[in-house]
Image (cartoon, rainbow, N blue to C red; front, side, top):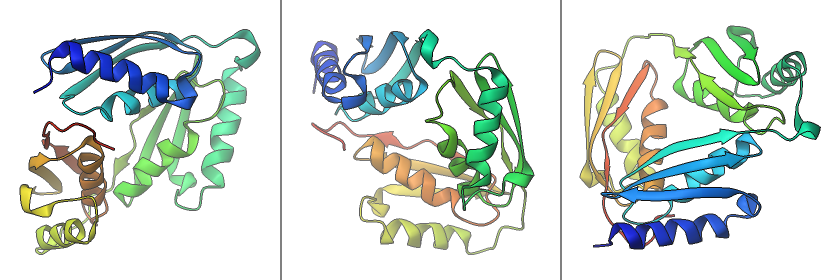
Length: 222
């Protein structure tokens, strides 16, 4: 089992390895396997890359991300400019029904709201705008419109897990309550945990996924 010091060392090395973070100064502290990232970075994509990088390290139980985005003068944009680019990105994304969404921008903080029919649309909307220059934070308040959940939804999600190369379906339990899916059990990596959640969101009628999957300790989790 890794000590907190060993986890801290590995996270620092992983962040140095990430190309997008070459110039970023990020503080890393670890307590009981929980990693806290702190400091100031100059773009929102770097904020996301730092969290993703920390989650790649084995033995990390959770990541607390306290990074602040301070944009350099040449990268700052007005809220109107950001809103225009966000709307453009959503409009041209084939997986996003932009007419169902509302965009609010305040001091570089973007909030997405509205209703969509599928969980993947909710996630794709956020992904579509994350790399737009000038954004400091994206808050995703998009909800999934409730649809009747078929009686075999548990089997369908389980079958999706079995088809997925990175998911060990034998260690995951699926519970359905109304339109909510709860995932319990253990996975080998954060990537597997995310893949399982994404697969659950793909089931029609699901408007909430509670991911209680625990990441087991391993040396590397890519």
